[in-house]
Length: 158
Image (cartoon, rainbow, N blue to C red; front, top):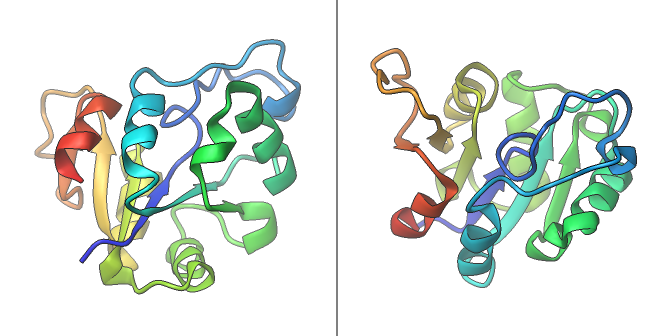
């Protein structure tokens, strides 16, 4: 039974404009289309966590950026490579997120937009995986359990 949904941050929940410095200080921040609606549907039924390898943001900066669009209220747990000591796709990043969340790998799903960073390591850690991808050829993504083309589709999966 799935109990924990772990979301990547940049280009999965919030648009990554590739600006310098922490996202919390960018002049503009915005949701990924469909992310707000998906989280509104899911956050009461699952423990929702957000986990990032962002270079410029620790957990407090991530929370501040999420708060700018009201996204912080949908997450129960927040993880950053700065606090975890590991970066994606290192399997230890995902194992630590699972451990700190208090769930088992087989109860956990990683949702992200980058196959090599978000999906491969999560799958090695024993998590189910959802790849947010607009590619039509997914044969090169064997570790993705599910492929979605928009965040709206998460509501159909969970």
